[in-house]
Length: 530
Image 1 (cartoon, helix red, strand yellow):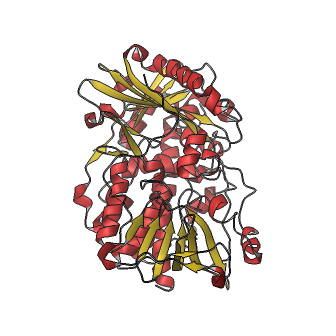
Image 2 (tube, helix red, strand yellow):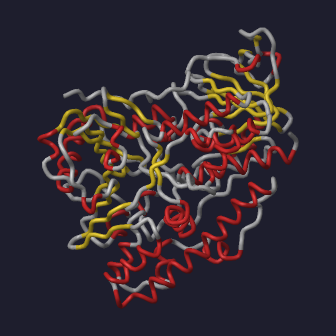
Image 3 (cartoon, one colour):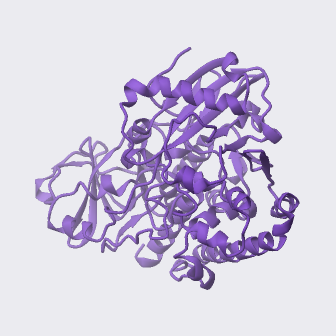
């Protein structure tokens, strides 16, 4: 049984060679100094060009931004430090098994969803096969199993049957959450309809922006067990109900009811690869193994991007889908210090994950036939998650069995099982020494939900926060960017042509939020000067 100590390179089919699409030429200059005269030219294609936008990083935010720009005919290049696009959308292959590295499911692939709109603008929507989850998830509590139905009306009725005394509270809670999500959807529509959309804070969002999710629940819910059931997705943002932002939590939960919970057939990497194909087909470019060393600021504007291998890209605009600790904090010079003064580096970074990837032979019988399972050993999620203490012998963990809905991920008669635990920022352990033992411990915990799986193991391996950090360059392997609290920082760097997208941006964590940040940046960019 092989247990590699790394998160492997995604396997799917984007051409990762450095290519120039449709005759485009990449500039390539060398030199870390903020003075242009200190650079040494190196242009393997012979002619330097100025890009309308250089996108640093190819997570959902960067790819969405580049896709919108390319679809509008802008000259855009995406620089990815890894071998493949996607960030946490990565999938990888082990023999005949395909694993999603970090993402369980995503919203935005319904007919009016963000990803569908982007794919349609690229002219490739029909190439993605979608799998919609129903149930979205099953949550296991002591003595209580709750199926999260895909249709909100069915879920509400299920909750009313379980908690009949809370009927009015349940209905009022989802009415309130629906009104909040209406505001979020209107902002998304504004962005697609008008380049300057999403600059206002709608009325309902304004009412709840300073509340924690626990406080938001308290507006309508009295039963502590029901409050726990309604908080079952808090681990998706890595915080307890008492600490996580109500707006960000409601946005995540309601997105699955309004926009659906989906997986791309064949793994999430399919979506990332397809977006790259669409960007290239529209004249844009994607370059892998192009880690960015410096974003230069001259005269108050970003002017060029230097990669670690010495290539330099001149840009009218720079979009960072990367951790700002990487792209901003490392820069030198007086202008860099002015930028850093407006950045929230004192805000806490989100937790990471320890992830187990397992392949098993034979059938599997997850609770309620669900492909996504949350297991909790208590109803007090504030005590469990604030702070979360990982690697205890409890049943609190998350499990995905994506082969329940997508058999193509494994050979016939086999299944893929992915289990994970939160790891708080700053948690200290010698991962190289402890990794195997922790993986076996997590396997034992998963077996309490899926009995007998360890006897049928064909393959298993694990990823630590160090693995996630190495492959994504997120600070400490952060799974959600900044902590998603009500005090979430506003990013103010004062550079008019620098755009932060992804889960480090103001739109917050989650694949859908990251995509929206990219679309918003692209639309604003085109309105401003492109």
